[in-house]
Image (cartoon, rainbow, N blue to C red):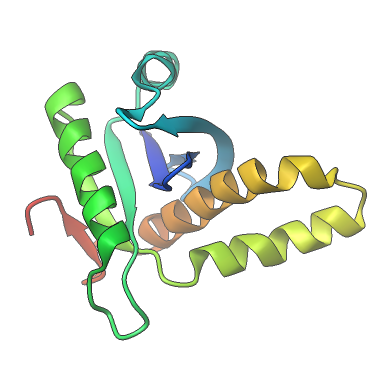
Amino acid sequence: MSCVFGFDVGSRLTGIAIGNTFTASARALTTVAVREDGPDWHRLDALRQEWLPDTLVVGLPLTLEGAEQAASRRARDFAAQLVQRYGLPVVFVDERHSSQEAAQRFAAARAAGLKRRRDAAGIDAEAAAVILERWLSDPDSPSANPIGH
C-alpha cells in the first residue's frame, strides 16, 4: 500500500489530494498558497513529512485540442521543483475538465449546506482529487506521463 499526492496547480492556490494505491481511492486534502516566489514550500514540506507519499501526480492543463498553454508551463515548473526538492517520481495527468467535475461535486455539497466562501479552496483540492483518481484508475494510461516525457 502506498500513499500518493495529487496536485492541481493554480496561480493563487494549489489543490492537494491524497490517495492510496491499494484502494485506488483519493480525497481532497487541502490547498497551499502560491506566491510570486512559488508555492508555500514550508507547508508542502510539512504535508510530505506527515503523509510520506511515494509518488506525486501533477495535473497538466492542456487546451481542449490537447496543446500546451501558459498554465502547462506553470505545472511543468512546479513538477520539476518537486523532483528537485523531494526526489520522488512525478507523473503528469491530463487535467482537462477536472475543475468542472470538481465544481459539479461541490454543487451537490453546496446544496447540502456547504459554505460558499470555502468553495474556491475546496474546489481546487477536489480538482486535485479528480486528477489523482484518474491516475489511480489507470496509472499506465497514455495520458499519464512521467516527468520528462
